[in-house]
Length: 219
Image (tube, rainbow, N blue to C red):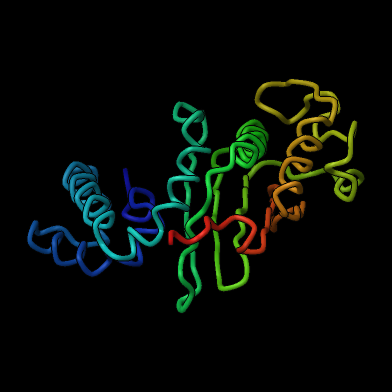
């Protein structure tokens, strides 16, 4: 059984809820209907909604951030967990035109790789922006970081997987993945935060001042 909540990407729910409600009504399907009989119709409507979104002013406005997240997630298309990318912006803020920086993509891919390895069922990547800053949060629903290393993550030879326990790959790390990612991101002007979520799971937040990641205006 597929619900509307599960099938529709978060960033589309807000903008197309009214459209979907009307469209589903024409198909004699209520928004709340989650029966398997209508899954095909729902997915078709969602695909049309996503295509429409790309051509709205909001879709164009968010395109650089969406492209960055998609590039980070592309290697995990066949991952055994659910991955979702979301872009959230302050109402009055213009979306930043993000420069493509290979070091950022490499570092963010490393963080997502760790999240996928430890997640129980899903990983959520959320990009946020306002007039002052841009951030990307990687959140999983796994066991979270051990309290004794939480304050040391990002230092060399401090690892979230001392013997691979609780991870999908059972790979025993040396702590260099977070260290390299942190080093690359800090060189671009970012700051990193590691914490545990409630009720569980790990959260990594990478935050930049807008001017550090925005492309210069075209003159």
